[in-house]
Image: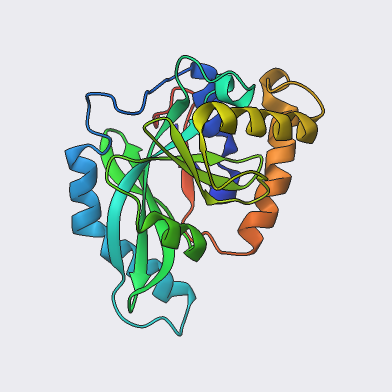
Length: 234
C-alpha cells in the first residue's frame, strides 16, 4: 500500500533503514550508483528539475543541468555512538544529484525505486548542498544526519562536511575523530545515548523540529510516497 505525504516527513523510512540494519561499506565491490539509476538521471533528471523549478519559481529560466548522482546514506548507530565499527553507513536506497541554472548551483533532486523502477522522489532548492556536491569525486558516499540537518561525504575513511547544519566540528576529519564529535553532539541534543526511544518517537520529534527549520529555508517541491519499513512500495 502506498500513501502520499510531504517530503519533509520522510523520517519514518529513514528510521526504518536504521532499524533494519541494512549496512554498506565505502569502497565495496559493487558500483555506488547502479547503471539504471545513472541512466535515469541522464535521461530524466534535467526535465524533472526544470519542471519542478518552473512550477514554483516564475523567474526561473532555462533548462536545469544535472550533475553526477551519489548514493544517500545515514550514519550507522556505531558512528552515532562514537564507535565506528564495523560499518559506518546505512544505505537509504536513494540517490541525489545537484542541478544548476546558468552555471549556478540551484538545488538537488533525489531518485529512488518504486516497484523496482527508478523514479523521482523529490526536488528542492537546496543550493548550498548542490554547490557542495559539484566537486565531489565519483564514488563518494553522501551521508545525511537528520537530527543536525547536516550532510557529509565519506571516502577512504575520511569525512568531509558538505552542509554543517547544526553540526559543530572540523570540515574534514578521520572517521574515528568525526564519530567522537558527532556522538557528543547527539548525546547532548537528545539528552541520552545514541539509541532512539522505543519506536523512535523521541528521536523523530527532535528530528522533525530540526528538519522543519532546515526546510523552511528552502522548498521541497515533490511529495514522496511513504514506504513500509521494508523499504519498498507495497
